[in-house]
Length: 179
Length: 179
DNA sequence: TGAATATGTCAGTTCTATTGACATATTTCA
DNA sequence: TGAAATATGTCAATAGAACTGACATATTCA
Image (spheres, rainbow over the protein chains, first blue to last red):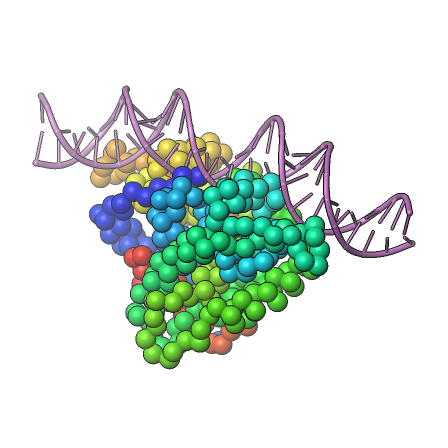
């Protein structure tokens, strides 16, 4: 999937903004203080998560263009860099994709020496994955660009926002992967 | 893109969890209280946002299977339902895709009567998009499933978490679309 | 009236993901 | 020890979602 990196049309975004305010007032009821109900859609959160993720991955997309890599390459490289020595099976579980899907992307990263494989010490069937120097550098570069986005966001938010944001997101994911 | 809905292997997830704790301790420095630095990657937020979004869209995927629709259909239907009467150009800006990409998906939603078009009142070149009854019902069904995920998350979080989460996500996105 | 705009469409391509089948090496267990 | 299970890899076919480029139509605007 190639991705659309055209500039955003500002005129339309203003329209969009106005319409959204309207829609929010129309459809989103004010929230009670204590327990949160699930019987009414939480459009505020649905939309906020959509837009945040859209722009968050957009940062990486721009960088990856230079390497002729796509999002899939990034996700693989990211996790290998963060969890050096993880097995193929663990990577598949993290990404929730099949090994056939992983295959092409991983092969390209191996061929271009961003990742390397070593047989497992305990279990020699395993191919443990490690980032190379170049792989680590690229992973870090992308992570820094994304972190700048978070830093800009946190500048606009009260103290404690980082912990709150992380806790919120962790609770939203299935396994609360980040405790 | 078909999506992988196979059950998650729990053994590996435990491994994953252990490894992640390890990695987090190794690579993520403790955060200072006040101003947040951008010179160090915020792996906690990067990962939390990735997992939250992965599981959040997973909910919709399961539902959409029944209708032979994909993620793209859902995004279109969602925004048309939330902003009835929006123009094609506005929709393209929201989704950040090209009109050629939108075309197939929108045509299917029109053909199957989940969305309908009406010419703009002021500008008759426009094709304003509206959900049909069926379209609204499907959009609502999916939004409720996703909202249940949020409700479960909020149950585990202190009061105020909803507002904090929404504010955090809004600040992370480019235009703070949700004020 | 002519340029710009909003939308639609055709054709070809790329990337990411899927299912299914099968192969190899290694480990585990009866 | 030998069979079954596991970890990984690979081939083939297909689907879904995106892209670029080119061109057409209707409508509005200057």
